[in-house]
Each structure stands twice: as structure tokens, then as C-alpha cells.
Length: 481
Image 1 (cartoon, rainbow, N blue to C red):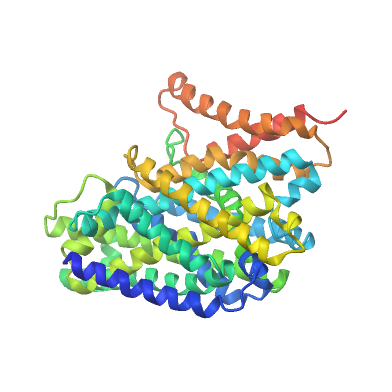
Image 2 (image 1 turned 90 degrees about the horizontal axis):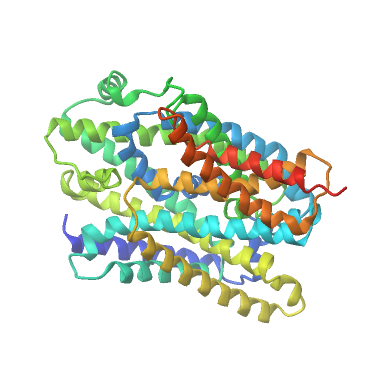
């Protein structure tokens, strides 16, 4: 597939996104940007959140991951369902009862100002790095297959993407993203389905036969029973559960969309629907991975060493123009879907939680808008810097790095909210930042030395739970007498 055709697909899709942005951002104000004026239809939010939840990580990393880990990732997905139930029953009622714009305002009410700032700061670090991981994955693929051909350096490609995202989200914010995510989710899912159809046609095999072939292959292994493995099924399940609680329920990015719904009942419907849809959708991505490796083995396709590049290499190099175009559009959809909401939520959290612009300029809408847009530009520049930096150190599947990093940065948030919700104790607020920093440091040391003491045992993504427990223990140590 020619780089020119790929570039044309990118430009056409981008024009469509900007058209949606122009329509949805008319008459938008600061409340439109932050919470969509609480008028977002829940079915639209639920459908759009599929794309935001999947992002480029699922789109590319999960199919490539199948070669080494089979379908063991599906145990994490089942854990997601349990995590969404906790969000629906515990966190959403709390957020709506307190009428929050930023979910970290809860920490100010429960513990104090420093706890509030600590929670918001950990989110900012988590989301900046998480969004950068996702964008790096997508941009690096486009760089290899398109922009290297034109001699455009990686850093300039990153700047181009982030400036486009910054422009179409600056005015409408969450009000625009609710609708653009709907389009992006559609293209991501269509890209996967069309890819599978084309592979089956080239292999001259029906869907039922392929399902049977995958089922009886080594790729379909779901349950890992070795307790020492980082993919031990119970570790995977509970890691998935708590990853969802923190990366959705305690994440301003994902909760900002829920808070844009008309009321609590709509938000609950949104979350329940999302949890049920994500199970078959993730299974389709795993199935795609197995299909791609079976295809490669059948036609002796030489695969790249980095598993994240398996899907793009086959789609763009072997499946023809149609597959290439739908893959590129799906990939761009994944990039936009993960970065636009991240940029909006980072702007919201930094504006409200750190700078408290909503309080300083509550009587001056125009000045609030000006300051918020300055923060928006600043966050864009920070993400650009982190993506370029990540280019220098990446050597693993991005999904693995993303979940590992989340275990360290979201752990203190998990501990703070669990302690606040399930105990009545008050803590010495000034010591909370110390506890929140110490917990991930100790978690890292436990992970490092456990491998030396128990050579066969490996921590997986359950480091998040360990981190959260250490935070809770630390908070008990600073309870007010």
C-alpha cells in the first residue's frame, strides 16, 4: 500500500473529525468543555467509551500479544466486568451525590487540601504518561509506514498529530469528544471485522472453520494455572478488576464522560452497557491476533520482532488496498480517541484541581475560557515531549508497559479512595503526600527483591493491589489521635 494513499486516508478522516467538532462546539462554553452541560445521551457516551477504553493499545498491542500469551489477557477482561460493577454501585453514586466536576474534589472533602492536590497530581502523571504510551504506539506505526517515506522526522509527526487533536478539542471539549468517539469506535471495530473477513477469504476458509482452528491451537489458552507466572489466572482477574476501578473509576478522563450524562441512572446504564460490550469486543481482538499468526504461518510471512508491529505489517503489506485503508482509518481513530479525551481531562483536572480556575474566575467566563485554553496548549506540549522521550526507551509491548506503569501511579489513588470510602477515620492531611510517594517506591522494591528471593515467582499487574494496600497501611499510620 502506497504512503500517498495512506496519507490521503488520514487527511480525509481528519476533515470529517473537524466537521463534527465544528457542529458540536457551536455555542460551547466552559461547562460544555468540562461536563458537556450534563446533556450527553447515555447510549452515545457508552458506545463512544468503547473506543476510548480500547485505544491504540488494544487495537495493535492485544493482537500482537497473542503470540506469547495466548488468550490469557481474557482473564483480565473478565476482571474488567467486576471492576465496572464496583464503579456503578459505589463510585458513580458518590460523584453524582457530590455534584462533582473533578472527581478529586472528593479527597478535599474527605481528607483535606493536600490529599486533594496529591490525588490530582497522581492522576496528571498517570494520564500524561498513559496517553503518551497510547499515542506513541500509533504514531510509531504511521511513522514507519508513511512519514519515513517522506523524510519527516518522528518528533514532527508527533507535533502534527497533537496540534490537530488540540485544535478540534479546544473549544467543545467533552461535548465534542462524546460525538467524535462514536465515529472513532465505529471505525476501529469495522477495521477489525474487515481484516478478519479478508484474511479468511485469502485462506479460503469459513468463519466456523477458523474458530475451530483457533480453538484447537495453542493461541486459545485462556487459563494459566502456574501460580508463579505473572499471568496466573487469579492474578489476571483481580488485576483486571482493580485496573478498571482505578483507570476508569478513579480517572478523570473516563469519569468526565460519565459525569456529562443527564443523571445518575443514565450514567449507570452507560457503565453497565460498556462493561457487557467490552467482553465480546476484546475477544474479537484476541481472535484477530490468532488469525493473523495463522495467516503468517500459512504464507510464510516474515514478522517484525516487535509484536506491536505484527498487525500493521500484515494489514499494510499483505492484505491489499482495502485492508490497508480500513486499518489506517482504524488506527487513526484509535489515536484520536485515546488522545482527545486525555487532553480534555488533563486540562480539566489541572485547571480545576491544581490552579482552581473555576474559583478564581467564577464571575468572569471569558477570562476562565482564556486561562483554560492556555492550560490546554500547555498540556499538548507536555504530551509531545513525553512521547518523543518514550521513543528513546521503548522495547516492549506497550500494553504491558501501560499496565505496569499504572500499577505504580494509580495505586495511591486506589488506597486513598478505599480508605476514604470504607473507613471513618481522619488522617493528618500534611503527611498524605509522603504516604502516596512512599507506597509506589516500596512496591517497586518488593517487586525487585521478590525476584531475587523467589527466582521462579514473578509479580504481574497485581502490583497495583500491593501498592493500594501499602497506601492504606500508610494512611492508618497517620490517623489523627
